[in-house]
Amino acid sequence: MFLLKFLFYFSISFILLCIPIKHATVFDYLHEFVAPVTQPLFESVRDKTEAGFEESKRIGLKLFSNARPKKQDSVRLKKSSIKKESTNNNHSIHENEYTVEEEDLLKKVLENAY
Image (cartoon, rainbow, N blue to C red):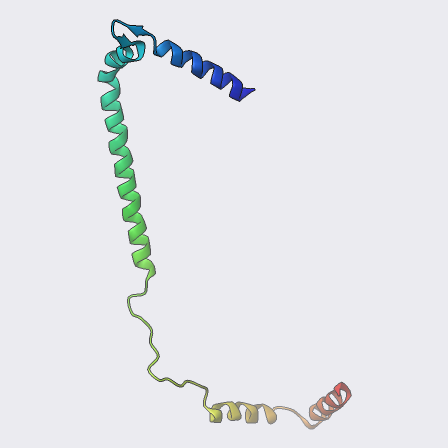
């Protein structure tokens, strides 16, 4: 329903603005009358819009330039792994922490698990 009303009123206004009077349309006469006010208004809106785009572009560039790290990480060696001595030392540390009773309980739990 809205679309039908819109099309109806648009058609009526278009027909009225296209009526020729003295070799010019009603729209041309309205444009001459309103142009001194609308031209500065449109220029002001265009300037504000361009300034807004430039400001948002500047902020976007600043945001993304701060997101990149200044120093790039690099791997100097082609091979990297944990040293085996350090992993073996960790196991030997934990072996001495259990009491005899705790070791027996752990053995029973492991035997029951299999």
